[in-house]
Image (tube, rainbow, N blue to C red; front, side):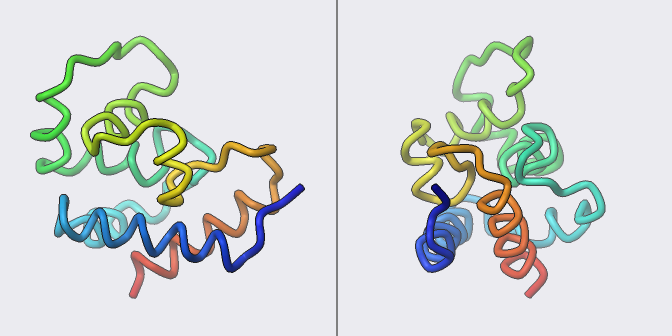
Length: 118
């Protein structure tokens, strides 16, 4: 079962507002790496990209000890740096937990791209 596009759009807006507060240059960082962006890839999603390329996110991440050996390393470090559990990350459009339906991922990709490219 896929989420409604409206629900996903609201989640992305919540996530964008959070990033505006915590990492003001996030749009620039994502635009600089737009060719690699993929919401479904933990290394290339919003949080993974920011954790790798944003100095501000790395500062926030250093406050939390994380296991770098997991395939979700960058994403997980970014999520923890923003003080988000898995449910909160989903509520902010950073991941989709319900089914992994590709329609949701495609929609989230498009919504996030529209958000950081504006």
